[in-house]
Image (cartoon, rainbow, N blue to C red; front, side, top):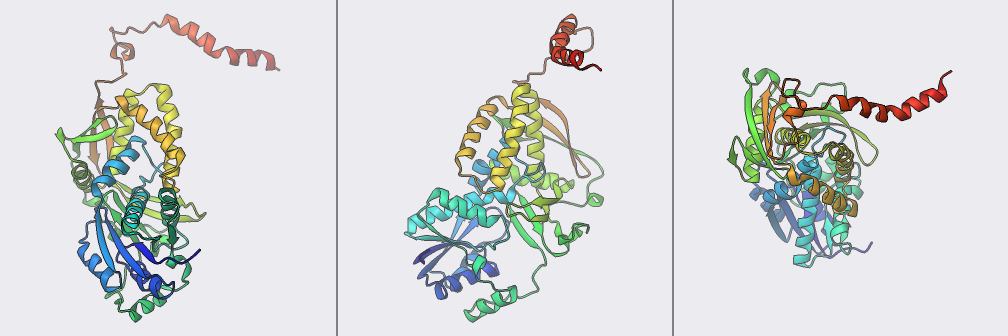
Length: 400
C-alpha cells in the first residue's frame, strides 16, 4: 500500500490517537493530518480535545456534532430491529462506528485527503468496523492503522509522544478501557478480565446499584410511531432529549446493567460490562408492542432477522447489501407498530405492565373466557385432527 499525503484521523484525544499524529508524519511520511472528533453525546467538552490535536501536530482539528443523526439514523433503526447482540448487548458502541466512518469519509472528500486513519489495535472489533465501513463508502481511500502496526507498549507509546511535545497522562490512567456515548457505556479490562470477579461499583456512572435505587417503583409510558419512540409520559420529545431523559430515569432505578462474556469477531472471548438504560428499556418496550400489532408469522420470522441484523451491525457491515435488504423488511414490518407501552421501573428491572394500540390485533371477545366468548370451540376438533394428521400417520407406521 502506498503511503498517503493527506490523512483524516479519527481522534479521541487519548494517548494512542494523539501519538498517531506525529507517528503518521515522521514514520510514515504523511504531510498533513486532519483530526476529527465526533460528538456522540459522550458528555465531555471536546474543545480541549480539539486543541490537543493541534498541539500534537494536526494541521486542522474538527469537531462533528452527530448526536441527532446518531439517534435518528442509527439508534432508532436498531430499536425497530430489536437489535441485541447475543440477545443481550444493545450495540451502543457498534452503532457509533459506521456513523464516525461516514463523517471521516465525507471530511476526506471535502478536504481532498487520500486516506483515513484510526487508533484501533489489532485485537478489537472497531478496527473491522472502521475499515469495512470506509471501504464501503469510498473504496478509493487508503486506511491507515498505526497502533495496529507500531508494536509499541503503552509506556513506549507515551515516551514516543513526549518526544513530540505530547504530555504524558498527568495521573495514573484508569485500569479500565471505557467507551461512552449517548446510548451508553462499555467497560472492559482491569479486574474485569477475570470473568469470575464481580464488577466493582466504581465502574458504573449511568446506573445506580440496587441498594441505592428508590424503594418505590416508577411508572413511565413510552409512545411509538411506526416503531420509533416519540413520546415519554405523553410528551413529545426530540430524539436526543428522549434518550437522555430515559437514561436518567431508568438508570436511577438500576436498569440497564449488562455483564456478559462476548464473542468478538476476531475470535476472542471478552468480558464486557455495559450500561445502556434507555436502549434496554426501549427495545424491551418496542418488542412488546410488536407482539400486539404484528401477525404471528411476521413476529416469529422477524426474530431470526433480528439476530442476523445484530450480528451484521456488530461485525461492521452496516453499509452492506444484506443490511440494506434487511432494512427494507424491517421498515415494512413497522408500518403498524404504533401505540403506547407502560413500563414499571423497580430495583434493576423494567417490567412491561400494559400496552395499547389502535392497530392492536388482540381481540377481546376471542381471547376472553367469560360469557362474551365468541370463539367457536367446536371448530377446534377438526383443526386438531388436520393439524395432527401427519403425526398420527407417522405413529401408525412406526408402532412396534
